[in-house]
Length: 275
Image (cartoon, one colour):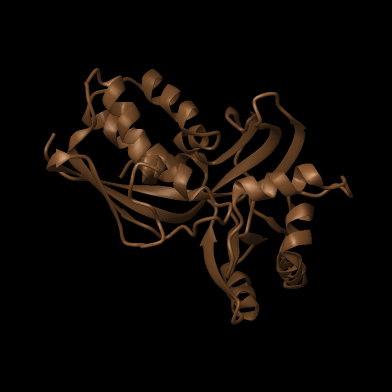
């Protein structure tokens, strides 16, 4: 297959994220509700002679074998029964999902790379899904999309009935939070009042700006406002686009930017991710 293939890798928010326990393998037992949103990266998979290459328009994004896309290519190459390192294909990544924001950009990119390369190299679905589990806890979700309950590490998935569509205001502070930092702060913290996201309190203790953003979104009328995943992005759900746009304008400051997007149901996610 020599023709180029272009796919979209959509972001997610967590409508809820409960940390149940710490597992023996170092991961945490989770109960989370994933929700797809329309914000997306774009991957172009094309033929290119020589070793596998990854390029990205964002210089802050690694384009070496530490990137999950690179690791996804290696998994699919082996699953196709080929020896050595992947070759004769390149992937160009246009990055729009902020990094270290709790929006799942790296995992979503990996899932779409798996899906595209499985098609290109004729790898069966069961092997593709096994590779998704091996790559990371969030990656299997991005093969499903929509509203999904995630248990265990977040990779035991149960599709839910899609809630009504909503407009999403994303508020992005001028700092990121790594997943490792967020869970480390959680492990070191005293458990306080229950929240939509159990990681929110420990992260807010280290970055109070996140708490101020959540309060501001609630004042603007968000039906739900919370930190997404391990942060640093904060989201607010709104029933109408004009109200969401107004809220986004009011929350912009020198230290934060905003984006307005929308939720995606499972059917729309599958249709758009495949084109």
